Length: 284
Image (cartoon, rainbow, N blue to C red; front, top):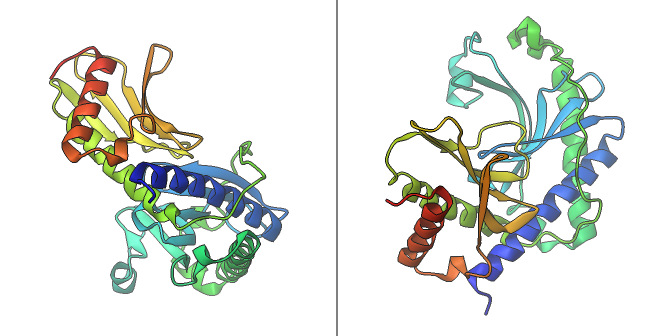
């Protein structure tokens, strides 16, 4: 019988395999494209900086951990000036200041993605990316897009090419892929509740930088301290929950050695509390 902690390990390996496989599928589907990594707490994936006539840097292929069963290929950008129609509001094409005029999704469960072998999974991703990219080009060059797109977003903005660190070797993506995101959510939510118990907190929020591909966590800042601390899981070192104030102080908690996900809820809270107090040199 597989323990929860073992399932977490398999799940994080599956996540890393998925992103390596997806990148390979994008490279083969769009060989001339300029692609960069992008991620924060609420999304992880790739930005299409340049591909044929697509607007520079406005198209993405990514997973939202809150809906990890769906791989998304979409256009998206921030445009507070756009006056959304009732249709766009109803179908969440406009959400707050963000506009998502083009969207295609691949349901990994309904398409039985996790039942395929490695080669078949790659072909599924390659087929999806290739088809979505072609339809995105139709949208990009359509009169329909021109009618609803602000002038500064018609062609987008070309950014300096960023180096992409993606392993070229990958294995079959297991169904544990879906569970790993849930384990992350549970861990970070419990950690957030622990950190909120400390006095003098000015700010506590999920990591939000678009450059946080392969990392999820929290940023904590105290009123009395100039520097903020980070509490993170790095996908390439997922065994540890890490604490750091860059260039000042570091600490880590080994989730695997402590069998964290198999502990009771109260034990998990105690372990995280001890880790937080030791890291911060403070008591609750």
